[in-house]
Image (cartoon, rainbow, N blue to C red; front, top):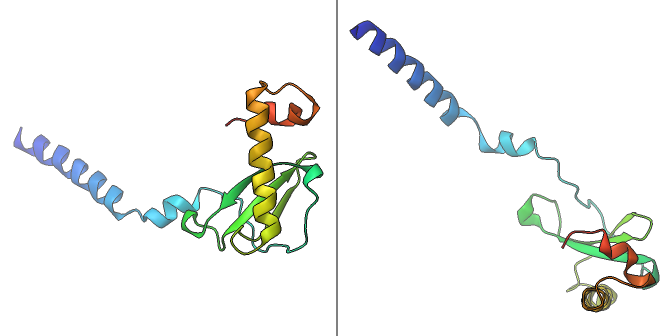
Amino acid sequence: MALSHVSVLSVILCALALVLHSDPAEAQADLALDCCLTVSHKVIPKQVLLTYRKQFRVDGCPRDAVVFMTRKALRLCAPPAAEEEWVKDTVKFLDTRLKKCKEIKFHGKRCQGLRDLSF
């Protein structure tokens, strides 16, 4: 009976050692990040844009950026709003449009693409 307790204890210790030995960086490497590697300083017309998201280095990307999504589902990388005034203005424009679309429950041509996105 003591032998079976030793076997069970050995299995538990081996499993614990395996879990503790796994590298957290390896576990995160399995998560694919969609990051901007470069940004464009060229102004993007507001009319073609649908929404945006912010990209941060702390999330595992190589640089901070603003990722704009067009109505045709293209992702365009721009520098952070703190670096470029046009990015700051465009983000403010998209935030205002989203707020207005929420108020009218996404009715109207300009709000059509935003309705399908989750917020």
